[in-house]
Image (cartoon, rainbow, N blue to C red; front, side, top):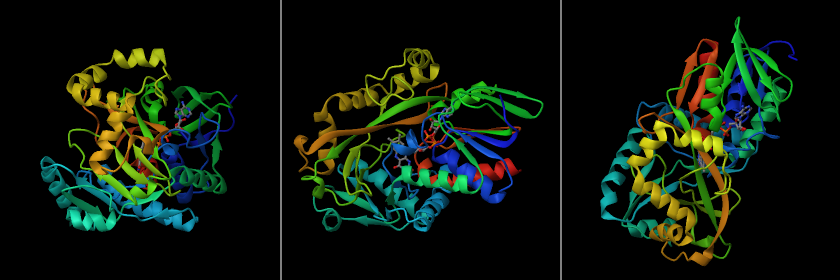
Length: 398
Ligand SMILES: Cc1cc2nc3c(=O)[nH]c(=O)nc-3n(C[C@H](O)[C@H](O)[C@H](O)COP(=O)(O)OP(=O)(O)OC[C@H]3O[C@@H](n4cnc5c(N)ncnc54)[C@H](O)[C@@H]3O)c2cc1C
């Protein structure tokens, strides 16, 4: 059974899908927009399981979509939080070098930060102590613009706005089959089926599968990387005042295990990055044999594994043995003890990987007539979500 034809159907009620619906409706409230979300509520996957950091944009290659959309998205998300009384704090962050071989990368980041117009400042260990008395380093960068917020709360507020603007957000509605014919898409779902002129795929961890369901052969496949967090016990939380990051390894896509004080005041350490055994595998015991088999048979994973044996093994060890996790954190805060940490939540990142095993670095949007597929929207896509939504709405309107 289908109802009347929608103008736009958006698959995925994460922060990107909801931001897109809002942008479309703000531009033209007469449009019939439906967001289809398979879970019982919005933001149940990446948008509700992340570090809650509004990134400054310092890491991203000038000219990339990430650089542009993070810069405008950061401002928009803070303005949105202000407008809707959602708690946020512009804490700034420290990127700390603990070894001489990290100084070149720290200098590159400093230069890039200035190119992006950010307020970056090189700090000596004594100056770092004024910000973070328990952090050990040989040099650091302070980036003033970084902030913290609860992206799940942002997503829920976006849902409310979409509804107020006359859009639909249908939860517990999994899109199981898509057929495109005669200028419309027919979406078979586990709820009421939907017909729509335009289809926007914001399905996160499932984005390549949804693209395939429409007949698109996406240039990359999604591999799920679980990021596990540990929480500092309240007695140890005073060891960290704000956000403390290591100098990232430029060869790897993730930022390294860091310490973040969240908007609720709790301090988390992580996330690591281990290949999840299911697309939505939040624990080691979450195994989806068919998905795993499919991933293991893919050239993308074979090549990726061959290139990153050491880094991958280190991540697995760090996941299995708390001692390894703690040792990495002690490079940043030597006073931290194993007993200061308890296991906490995990999130699963949707990372697009090319068949040659290289990770897609930038946001990747595949366009087809009357279809948009967001194939790669990893961090900082939560920070950038309102800007990504504007970008997708603009492309739909073209
Ligand atoms: C551990 C971790 C830490 C991170 N830290 C940060 C950070 O500090 N700052 C930052 O900016 N970003 C961060 N990110 C990245 C950020 O969370 C994501 O980039 C962002 O949430 C992506 O949003 P999304 O809407 O694309 O995906 P999602 O939030 O995953 O939403 C996709 C939705 O699609 C739904 N869906 C999938 N298939 C179907 C289907 N067939 N039918 C219906 N619905 C479907 C899913 O249920 C899901 O709700 C982090 C991510 C992780 C995992």
